[in-house]
Amino acid sequence: MRDSAIKLTPALLGVLLLAPLAALRGADSPAAPENEPPPLIKPAEPTGTGLLLQPPLDLSEFTTEKFVGLSSTVGTNRIHKKWTSPVVTLPPHTRGEVHGLTEREVKDYMVQVRRLFDEGAANPVSDAGLISTQENVIRRPMLNHISAFSNAVARVYLLVQKTSTDEDWGYFSIVQDLTTDPPADYFADLNGQEIKFEGANCYKCHSSGPLAIHPARGDLVNDPPLAAAISEHIAQQPLSRFHFPKGEVPPDYGKPLTLRFCAKCHDADGYRLPLFRVHSHPIRVLVDFGYMPPKRRLNPSEVAQLKAWLEQKP
Ligand code: HEC
Ligand code: HEC
Image 1 (cartoon, rainbow, N blue to C red):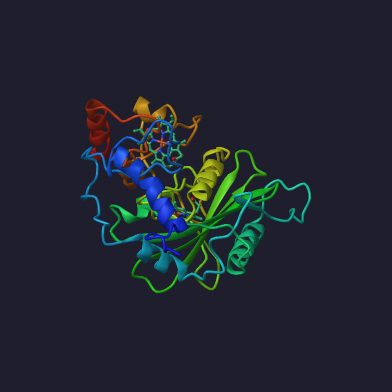
Image 2 (image 1 turned 135 degrees about the vertical axis):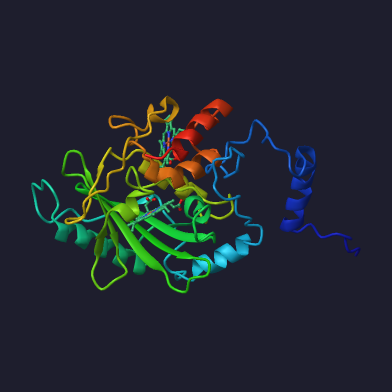
């Protein structure tokens, strides 16, 4: 009997089948072929608007393997869950006819979702987030695990986070109280002995409550369909208002951004809430990396107007 020179293993078959396609497309062809669906998560590409205060961070050393390794230190029993609904349903609220959750109830939700995550009963999406990695004083990959939960009275989010060089994971939460009109967003730091409500610290990025998931690079997210589904859930959130904790006076943020090409969506009665200069960090990053406005790029004159507004002293 004659041994065939090449055994056709499944892996080799894959190479044989895919190689001609790759050759046809060219290794780094910019445009995907028309019959390919657009990526679920639009890749982050700096567009050189001049809006960034610091050059885009070089993440080439931060490989997919490093991301997976660091991200997994949170406990592999807690991440990479099989899911059907991206949002975990919480048991019904215990008190009927609620018009405004009490602070105790808000904190109980935060404790509950932290426990669900720790027990491996959440559906976290894991990524290295764009906004917190770029420009930030940290300038290191920011690793996140984000999970969403809800019942009839609340939408609850948990963020488990550390930078690439931190040892320990930190826990943060947002509770949207849906029983008030408009709904109220509570923000808290869960790392101390007591849950600590936060205001201005969180508002400087979270101008409209929870933020959509924007990974720093296409491969720095563990489950793109889950990231897209959670982003969709966040994009469809009710227009809420930021709840400043008792005793914290909200700073005077001056006048909101009124440039039409942003404010037609970011306005008091808009799709998202108004933006102020305090939000300049997420503004610079989301516009430069091509996410805002959502469907087109700003022209040079619009970039100049936005830049002038960002640099204006109040
Ligand atoms: C430097 C900007 C920044 C600040 C300040 C900030 N966050 Fe966030 N936060 C983000 C970004 C960006 C995301 C989405 C990350 C991603 O794309 O993976 C996020 C996500 C979250 C999430 C998961 C739900 C969501 O919005 O996607 C929670 C919960 C959260 N943050 C809580 C907080 C709390 C509480 C504070 C204040 C103590 C805070 N954050 C301050 C940028 C910030
Ligand atoms: C067509 C509507 C639309 C326009 C125009 C638009 N945005 Fe947005 N913006 C959104 C939506 C929807 C989100 C939430 C989804 C996301 O972050 O991808 C968002 C999110 C943001 C955020 C994060 C805070 C938040 O609301 O979640 C910032 C900052 C932001 N946009 C800045 C801008 C700036 C600056 C402009 C003008 C250059 C702009 N946007 C134009 C719809 C718009």
